[in-house]
Amino acid sequence: MAEQTYTFRIQRNQVVGGGRLESRWQEYQVKVEPNATVLSALEEIKGHQDGSLTFRQSCRSAICGSCAMRISGRTRLACKTHVGIAARDGVVTLAPQANQPVLKDLAIDIGPFFKRIQTIRPFLEDGPETATQVGKTAYDHVNQVSQCIMCGCCYSDCTMAEVSPEYIGPAALAKAFRFVSDPREGKKSDRLRQLSEPHMMWACSRCTMCVHVCPKDVKPMEAIVKLRTRGIAKGYVEGPAQKHALAFHEDIKKSGDLNEFTLMIRTLGLVGTLQETGSALHLLKKGKIPSPFPHQARGIDQVSKVYNLLEQNPLDVETKAPEIVPE
Ligand code: SF4
Ligand code: FES
Image (cartoon, rainbow, N blue to C red; front, side, top):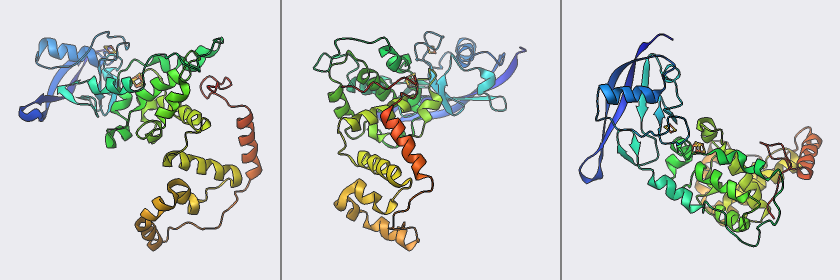
């Protein structure tokens, strides 16, 4: 492929007095083939135009996760992204990962990200639930999440991490799923109890960004959904998010339609609902208070059939194998 000149618009960041971050944009012209990687273009800039430009890289093979950065609006691996695909009208925009502290230019402090991973105890623990036998299909259930390279792309583009820095994030939850699903793990229930606490698995808003940006097809959100199912099965249902999900489940199974009128009270309880009186009055003024009379959807018998089938034959959505529910 013929070489073309691309503009690289790069966010230059520097920590100045008092820990304040000073940012500016700087442009570089680089002549490369469209299928050259963004990382090779960055090396060209650093080697021949501006040695002060700082970024991380190591393996150049989408294995180590260190070159993750925001490339034309999405967090991706620079060593896996082709310049021609990233460019918009000949311009490639580069910025450091979001939701993480920046050290310099495109390099972030990865410490807080790994602290989140540590929170979920990323190692097998011996305990009362350790299986004495490991079946042939056991690995299928952890295979996909085991592909994670800890690049942080999912955390950087996570919309919930953006508004709630306490949220543990998709990478840590995918890692947690790996241990909850491993037959050798001895404290599965204890893990699910911890994951049911605030800012853990129920804090995910299911925006699916983690699924879209993950360079290894880990699908963290699917792991989160499965963790939630297992947490509920264990009886960890005290939080409002769990109650909300159960109310949905109950309504759809019973009538195929949501009873929004009672949803809030079933989610927040009486006290929590009374605290929301202001919002209720606002909705009332706008004519948006739902009907108090339950409504049954047409084709409810079909809905019930699907529920019954799934309850009798729970399926792992990735492997299509019967789901292994931790004892
Ligand atoms: Fe990166 Fe995917 Fe792991 Fe997130 S889940 S850290 S995007 S490999
Ligand atoms: Fe290792 Fe890109 S340099 S993943």
